[in-house]
Length: 185
Image (cartoon, rainbow, N blue to C red):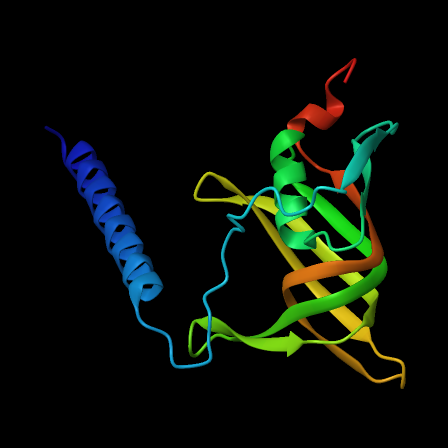
């Protein structure tokens, strides 16, 4: 065996070991207990909480565009996750506006490895809603941030954990997945 081949095999083994160590460290970080008052963000698992949600695909040249409207009481984040799954959206950008009855925002704390929930327990306007759809560990992941405003003009913002529409929320999704360019779709 030549020294070049031997070095190549050694390098490959080192890379494999480094990758395994990184995966182990990531898993340990995910399993660590968070301090009181923190939650770990992740894919939304609830389904069926947006019965009044409706959506339609809008025509576009190089991507798919959807308009998704949530009705009174619909939970936005679980609804978006379910919509993305049903429409095979693995990559896309989202934005929207509307009204909310309640919401939970979050302040990301990288030192703690989680998001500190900020409850919003009153009627507010969804003044800004921006985010992305991607996959995380093979599952659809909706990552969004929001700014909500109140009747006195004050605002709160952060990572959107959950939100209930009141009277409605309107969201647009523009995909960036490979199906977007497929002819006839």
